Amino acid sequence: MQALEKTYTNDNWITLIIVFLLLLIFLLKIIDHKKLKGYAMVPFYKNFIDDELEKNISLFNGFQMIISLFSIITLSFVCYEISIYYSQNYEDDFFTFLIIFGVVLLYFFVKWMLEYLLSTLFAIRKNTRFFLVSKFSYLYFASFVLFVGIIIVQYSQLETTFLINSTIIIFFLRFILHFIYNKKLIFSKLFYFILYFCAFEIAPLLILFKLMF
Image (cartoon, rainbow, N blue to C red; front, side, top):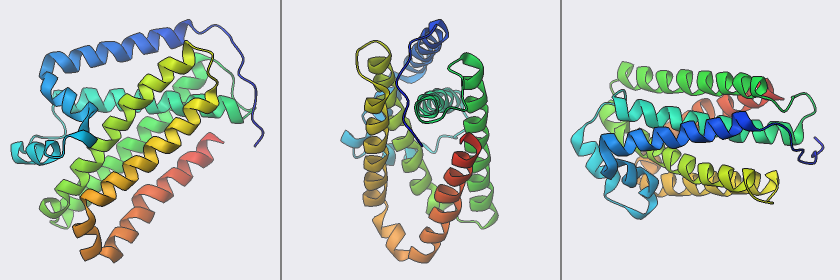
């Protein structure tokens, strides 16, 4: 794939999306500002995930649905920027973003539903709850950082490569932190973790990559 120079077109719709994401953050702050701060700073709050587990809060409540929507839109925009940068098959417009958003939304919906259903089916929800909650928490943290990166790239002289490099670093950090906090579970169930990682992390990403490129 050949990298393309960043071109400047009508980006009013991008501004509207950024404003909408800011509105979602504002709603999250109204609902629970402490939890919002916890997710935004989760690598620096070691006890935050434990506190969330003790509360036993459903992943389908209002706060979780809004923060999930925020993460999906943010990651969709990152995928959009990467697609425009590397591929000549995409037009730099809102319709292209909607297509990518739909693909990313479907990807996360199917992935989360399968994880939830399989953990329930095999009666391992208690054993995997910390693993799943920590994974969601670091995903939300990554989304907040990338949102800042999106704003910087859109309203500064920095190119898309800055956002691409930031995405790689953030998700590598997410993987490392997730591994560290779940090392006991991972090493005790290493075979199942490798199977899970291939089935729910690598394979879906390859499918998503094929759909986008």
